[in-house]
Length: 120
Length: 412
Image 1 (cartoon, rainbow over the protein chains, first blue to last red):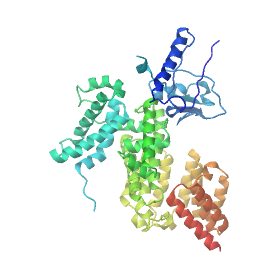
Image 2: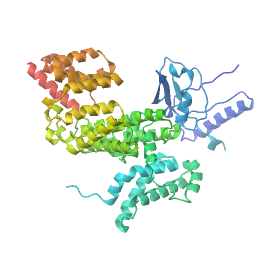
Image 3: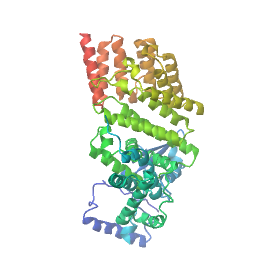
Image 4: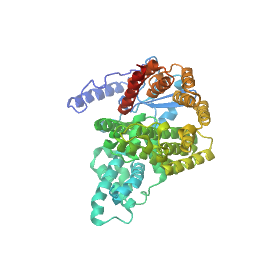
C-alpha cells in the first residue's frame, strides 16, 4: 500500500525560526527523513513555503482565474497532488491549467522550500 | 510659485522606471533593483551639485545603480545564486545597460501579475514604475505607512518565493489576458486618486497624474492596442474635470453643477485623440466605451444639453459585451436624467437584489438621490443611511451625512 501523509499545523506553532531551538527542530526533521528514506519507506516529500506564497488557479467557462492566496473553499477536499518542475510561476500555472479537475475544482500552487544550504 | 526642479528631479521623472526595469532584467530581483536605483539617485543629488551634471545623466545613473547592485550582491549572503551572474556581467558593464522599452513592459506585467492581490499590484506598480516612496503611497491610500510597508514587503516576498517572472507573456492570447490586469491596475490607481476630496488633494492629484503617466507609457509601449488608448482617453477626459470638481471649501461639485469653463482643454484634446485612435484600431472595449461616454460630457457646453440617448446607448453596448452590476447602476442614473427620477428608480428596481450592489455605496446614494428627487423623503433617508453604513471614505461619508440631514429636514 502507498499512503500520502499530509502535514498540517498552525504556522505560528513550533519553535521560532530565529530561536536556538530551531536548529534542534530542524535536526529532528532531517533525522526523520533520512532514517525512513534509508529504509525506502519515504518515496518523496518536501516542505512548503507558507501560505503567503500560495497562488490558486481554476477554470470556469474555459476562463483561467488566477488569484493570490491559499485555497479556502471548505466544501472541496484535497484529492491528490503533483510535484512538478517548472521554470517560474507562469510555467507552473500553464501546467496546472491542464489538470482535469481545474474546470470544477481548484489547484493550489505552493512553492517548495530549499534546504540545500542547511544540509551541506 | 514652485521652485524650478533640479536636474536630478527632472531625470527622476523620466529615468526611474527604465533604470529599475533594466536592473530587474539584469538581476531578476525587484527589491535589489529599487534600492540600488534609489541609492544612485541619492548619489546623483550629492555629486551633480558638486561636479556638474554628466553629459549622459541616464547612462551615469544606470552604471551607478548597477555598481550598487553588485556591491550588495557581494556583501549579502542571500544573493548567493546571483553571484556567478555578476562575475560575468561586470566585465562589460555598459553593453547590457541600454534601457529597452521591452524591460518596462516586462516590469509592468510582473507588478500586475494575477498571482498578486490587487492591492499588492497597485502598490508595487506605484513604487516600481512610479518611483513613489512607501510614505507617499500610504498617504494616497489613507493607510498608515507601516501597513503599506508591510504590504510591499509581502508582495516582494511572494514574487521571490513563488517565482513570479518579469517578462512579457509569450503568446498573444496570454498577453491580451494579462493586459486586462494591467489596465485594471492603472484604472484602480486613477479612480483612487479621483475619489472624493479628503483634504489631501495634492497627494491624491499626484496619484491621478501617476495613473495618466502610466496610461501614456502603456500606449507608447503598445501603440496598436485599442483598449490601452481607450484607458488613456478615459483617464484624460475624466481628469480634465479636476479643476471644476472641488469647490473653494473642498466640497465636491457634481458634474451637473460644474463650471465647464474650468475644464482642462488640452487634456480633453489629447483624450479625444486617444479615443479616435482606439476606435480606429478595433471595436471599442469597456474602457474605450467609457471614454466615449466621457467624451460626450467633455464636448457638451452645458449639463442640460447632455445627449443622454447616446450615453445610454453606450451603457447598453458595455452591458451587452461584459455585463456588470455597476455599469447597470450607472445606466439607471442616466435613464433618470433622460426620463425623470421615477424611470431611474424603475431601472434600479429591475436590477433586483445583488450582493455586489448592496455593499456599494454609490448604489445606495444614487437610489437615495432619485428617491429624494421624486419626493419619497423617508425612503431617501433610509437609503442614505445604507450608503453611510458601507462607506469607507471619510470625505464621502460626510457628504452623505449632509444629504441625510437635508432630506430629513425638508421632510418635517
